[in-house]
Length: 523
Image (cartoon, rainbow, N blue to C red; front, side, top):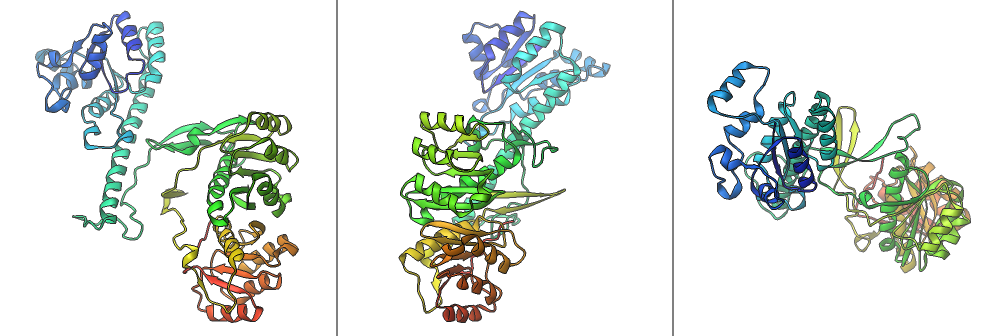
């Protein structure tokens, strides 16, 4: 029995090689793998000695040879295949152990592997007769089965082949993504692309997208308990979720992760919007039910909770700074949260929350990476868009009324705009002194969204600032806010009735700001 070993990741290589030779297998190797085996004193035959052709082109060509691929691809159920090998003096290869250059870690032309994927695909195609191993995590199981049974079962070879094709598919997808990024960078720099225009000129979406997903974690269940669910990540890409540490509580479910992601991203947007040193966001069903910025996290938490304490029960609390004993004490007396997520916890604070909030999942997490592209499934179709971002800064907003916002109102408008943009449409958000006091989410009517927001805010709406995620089609929604005492409003503008809205705002004596037509629908 012969095994061809050619691996970039040499984790477990020596143990595997010694295990195979101990079972009587002959080893074939080349390049760095051969050097590693030689250094470990493990007998093997170099590929160049087997083929009679030295490595060439700086290692680009070493395994691309009929002696190698004939030995891998021969169908042993066909006598003519075996006769051909016999005439040419080519021996059979029974196992290929190969993993590829780490392209995603440092994309470049030189890290585009050619010989490796060719051998992997050849062995995977011929898995009826040949085993292919691409993951060091499989080495122990392979050796155990060889020791127990003397060979690998067809089920095992088929499982390994599926893993191998997934490995090469992810590798190719990463190369396509890298080439797309280079094309986009060229266009962004004003370079003219040659050939057919494969990109949408507005958002630079490529003509094809190649996603390979790998399961990154199990979930307690999906969106509902009768649904199965798991978290996947795009192969070759690192998610901030990969570095999350769970300190306590039950296993996460689909909605725990979905809502925690929304909360964590929002809390990282709040300080710049509100001008405070610390921020807290509370999310329920992916919508903010509380948000505040302040000079300390205890105050920010308490003020975020005041927005809608009833909805906060069973929600997600995102803390924008380290959780101290004081912060933990405030949360321990607040409503039960399904998840608390923060950058870190003091040891005593963690112990306190673990004791008093046993059912709460306690997560520590790094800052979220920016999202460049979003996907949404529609059966056999996928909607793809670049991520919603704030392109028009508050400094570029236009005051269109006689009344002008003061400095405090400008800060509240910016905070309301951020909260509103991260709320399901139609949405209205009211903020007073750095604190969200009323949020109307997910309504078919903008008027009803405004009514919900002012009902939640109550007297706290007086003197506050409000945001609408899209323009007011009629003055009625604006008047709901004005009648509740809101003193400043920001909206995208762009309605054919903007003039009527401006007149209504002037009559009500409130300031109205247009955000350059930038709408922030969220569904």
